[in-house]
Image 1 (cartoon, rainbow, N blue to C red):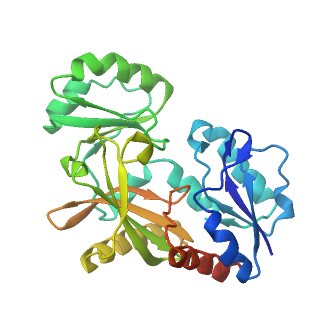
Image 2: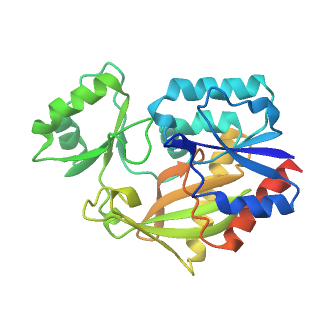
Amino acid sequence: MQLAIATFAINGAPFKETDFSLIAPLKQSGIEAEFVVWDDAAADWSGYDAVLVRSIWNYHEKPTQFIKWLELLESASVPMLNPTAMLRWNMNKRYLRELAAHGVPILPTYWPLENESTSLVAILQKYGWQDAVIKPIISASGTDTWSTSVSGAAADQERFDALHQRKALMIQQFAPQIITGEYSLVFFGGRYSHTILKKPGKNALFVQEEHGGSSTLLSTVPDAFIEQAANILHVACNIIGTIPIYARVDVIEDAGTLVLMELELIEPELYLLTDEISQRFANAIAADLT
């Protein structure tokens, strides 16, 4: 079986670093895998038995092309991991609103309408927020994500308006718990695998390593955390109608309750830091394909 691992390009070559450890265990299961740049016009996707979506870390910069790519693979009847319907649902952060409607705790969020004249000062005053985070509803890696405050909202209005003209946005209450850390619970084939604790660097808004954050593989995790994260994923699976091969549930803790920051089903870093973790992921892939 031939598997394409969809990734993005760095200096014209496929990025392999985060998922290369999958190659050997997949081969042991009879799956020959190779990395292919997702937006390479010369790629022949019909030559593969399936496509595993991984480090396509620039898809949010060209969402229209991303949708066309999904349509191309659908027309070629190439199975995708995760499935295309799941990827479409997850690329727009309004999925958070849908999960919240089904009882999943999320941060208090305001969703400006497309042509709405939104006053940052008025929003913060209305909801009693001292600080807020502005982000596009289609984004990744902190792109065009920034914070404002009661004291700075008026000065930030022009920046907000300029961004809102280009992109649909969301405004979230800032969660101070992010300073002490965000938990990323990883699941393969619906089964819990491992947890990463991510902490921000000097900029308390971002936990990504490219922004100075740090990440640690936790040796022990409270059962309650795993149960709550699994429930979040279960709710999403019921909405979408299928179980993802890979999923990362990003949460913060608020008095024992996990609050969902993101449910990553497209291109999350899965932290394949040990042979055992890579093997678990490979096993989930093989179980789905064979």
